[in-house]
Image 1 (cartoon, rainbow, N blue to C red):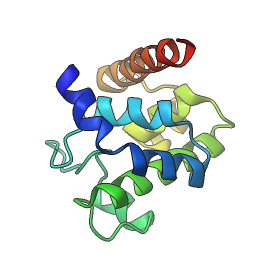
Image 2 (cartoon, helix red, strand yellow; image 1 turned 45 degrees about the vertical axis):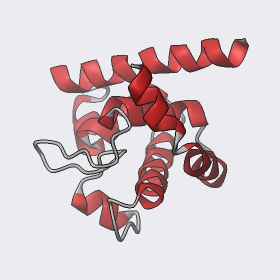
Image 3 (cartoon, rainbow, N blue to C red; image 1 turned 180 degrees about the horizontal axis):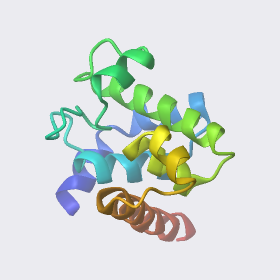
Length: 139
């Protein structure tokens, strides 16, 4: 939605910095943020994932995030984790996104995208947003 895109644009500076720092394209970071939280920095999921990139407490701690509600820290923590998943799965974005959503243990267990509706839909949604950024980039 336009309101989500407007909310997202507020964080462009942090997204650009995180992209440069961790080598993850801004289009991927933006697509994950829109899928995770619709760019709401105060979002909290039913499983207690928090902030723009919906970090679980353990993941946030592992990524060095001290305050998940700080937009910059949340974006840096989520992007760092995403970059680790991309490395772990040799740049395979679908597997990296599945691991971001369902955890790498599930991706490894099922030797691919887990058969969970939520994870299957998650990967499709991120790719749907990515197509929009590619159209924007081409114009």
